[in-house]
Length: 228
Ligand SMILES: C[S@@+](CC[C@H](N)C(=O)[O-])C[C@H]1O[C@@H](n2cnc3c(N)ncnc32)[C@H](O)[C@@H]1O
Image (spheres, rainbow, N blue to C red):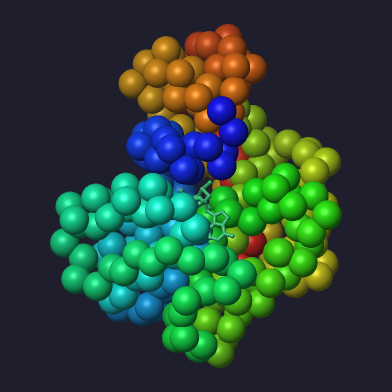
């Protein structure tokens, strides 16, 4: 199953996957302080709202944008269960955000633009440039921007990935973002559920590797690129 198919038809599966990630809360510890108290968060490619939910206590207003209606449906269910008074979810494209200029105190994009590399083999640079330009447009002057991407699932240390490394270098060299590396390990109820859930998203080889590891904790390395 490819990722387009998952975001279109299997949002609940995706939500289970990310619900198991970062059981130690390291991503929240890094990114939540980037938002001023009661500030406006714009979450680009919000998916099922996993990153937005880190900010429920902190953000005065949350605006999540995603291209996949099914992902937004799951995010809306989370929103109903949350007590957040101002959390909007809107269908839209990262390259043309339906958001006013200079309106956000923090703009995040979690695990979104890496897909451009595979989906737009010729045009990924232009797509990343357009998406970063949009993040900068909607951020208030001086407000931070954070882009989050995987550096390896079932890896204890960041792995080399020829296709993605060129995109990471683009974020740093072309756009001046600084990389921080954290672990956002998964914890599942059982090895079988780890293999089934990770395998459904990443494929059979991942399921086999997770089974072979034989641990309910599966390491994940994550890069967070922060800039303005
Ligand atoms: C790996 S998911 C990440 C979702 C969420 N940020 C999270 O951390 O779980 C990638 C998301 O990016 C969305 N996406 C991909 N390309 C997009 C685009 N051009 N504009 C808006 N959303 C996009 C997909 O629909 C999907 O929900």
